[in-house]
Amino acid sequence: MTALPFEDTTDFENADRGFLGALVPAVVKAADGRVVWDNDAYDFLKADCPDTAHPSLWRQAQLCARQGLYQVTERVFQVRGLDLSNMTLVEGERGVIVIDPLISAETAAAALALYRVHRGERPVTGLIYTHSHGDHFGGARGVLPRGTEEGVPVIAPTGFLEHAVSENVYAGNAMTRRATFMYGDRLPKAPDGQIGAGLGATTSTGTITLIPPTVDITRTGQEETVDGVRIVFQLTPGTEAPAEMNFLFPELRALCLAENATHNMHNILTLRGAVVRDSRIWARYLDEAIEYFDDRYDVAFASHHWPTWGHDNVVAFLSEQRDLYAYLHDQTLRRLNDGLTGPEIAEELRLPPGLERRWHARGYYGSLNHNIKAVYQRYLGWFDGNVAHLWEHPPVEQAVRYVEVAGGPAAAIAKARGYAEAGDLRFAATLLNHVVFADASNAAAKEALADVYRRLGQGAENGTWRNFYLMAAVELREGPTPVLLDTASPELVTALTVAMLLDSVAIRIDGPRAWDEDLTIDLVLTDEQSRYRLTLRNGALTHRPIALDGGRRAPAGLVLTLTRPQLLGLLVGGGLADVEHEGDPGLFARLLGLVTTADKSFPVVTP
Figure 1 (cartoon, rainbow, N blue to C red):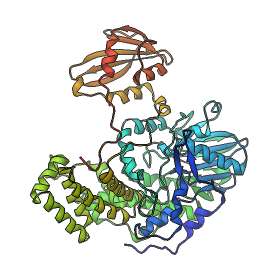
Figure 2 (cartoon, helix red, strand yellow; figure 1 turned 45 degrees about the vertical axis):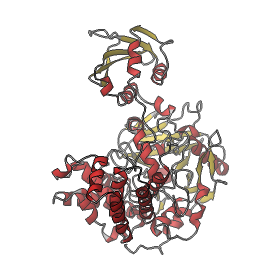
Figure 3 (tube, rainbow, N blue to C red; figure 1 turned 90 degrees about the vertical axis):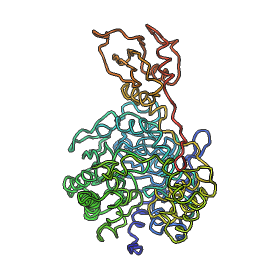
Figure 4 (cartoon, rainbow, N blue to C red; figure 1 turned 180 degrees about the vertical axis):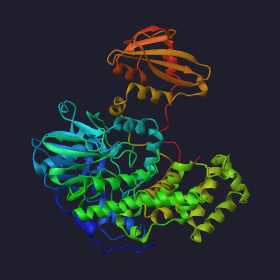
């Protein structure tokens, strides 16, 4: 392991700077009394690092566990430690502008209340989403309850709504299930359990909401004035999120870096799953920020972690973050073009010493290993060119054959334990995983694999790797449980456009059962003055907008005339009693009968 500068306490000094007060106790509950956030559970991090955690990750967890209201600079404040992300508050002429209202309405309300304890009952006069991930918009209703948003600008980068909703709805069930591993939902907060996620402590589990933007940022250099505060924007699409932006408060000399530059290496492909990010363009936008904002700031803050003070310090920070993403991109491409595969490059490549010893370049959330594989995937996809991997058996069938080759389950378990005892935990995990997938009822294999995962997790520097390994151990011993966080919450679904709503139905059609169906339904949306034709044929549900009068087309088998809220009601099981319709109403029932419901607790570490 690289010798790290543990004697450097700058991050601790910056994380504590400007502290005004904490939420006591740091526990947030939902209306039904359920705890959705408990930062006090991390009090154990005040102790020295035990042998059940990587010292570098323990240090990062200590920093992320700091909680309270902090002053960043004149009129700029942050609430940290009340969710995975930060809420930033900028005081204007009449009230306060909120930047990134956390994940849950409950934690956002608690953060705003903490601010008001120390700064007075200022109304929210603006809301800014830095980008399209749920931990930066989900708590919107906690700061702007229904009925209070009138006249309040809600600002976001162009494309925000499409990406915010599509990520959480189209592949939302699978992403959310995997996110339980990434953040360690079921792990106890303890030295031998969940100690953080690198980017923050963990995710809150309250109510996800969304207020659609009213102002789109469409270009770099665009300026907006909110409550007397001037803001200059830099669009950074395709970096940490498909829709993201940095922005400057010129009069306050404060620069917001969204999630483009935080105090760790970020993900090119997050372990919960997402579209692969472009590390090349990420580096270029960081370089552009250095030049574009020039010497117009004295402090930079982000949507996670703690600020960086001093113009030269910010430039150094941004330069090293730029070089980090550029290096891992370019060197992956260099070796990829030499014929190496993703795993081979990931095993070989290391960061330059000048970056490797920088705390903010350490792989606490993303990792060099899995980011290299992500860059490979972005350019060449899942296939590494070796035809032995072109048409392999799926996991269970492959596992059965591996165990047979190893001499049967008992022999395979014995061999795996030998590898574990010799310190080769990686191959022990591979071999035991084959035994479990060959026979999920083999208790000895599951227990042995759980122990290997525990050891791998407790030795990991990366917070999300630790959580994945330890969650896998829990599920091997206890089985899967339902996911607590609901990314397809009612308010998120209501933010879908009609086209996106129909897409979300199309991806849930049971194709084989629908092979022989041939039906056409028109939806006439009276509140949107639009008409859509739905066609179910060959197992695929397609849709397109058409003329309000139907145009010169064959008539649909069923025409529904309704409002968008009525359509939402129909799609969650409501009847046609209050909906004007013409044609065969049985067609809609046939369509809904083909819509499947995803398993929220599908197996991950067992077949």
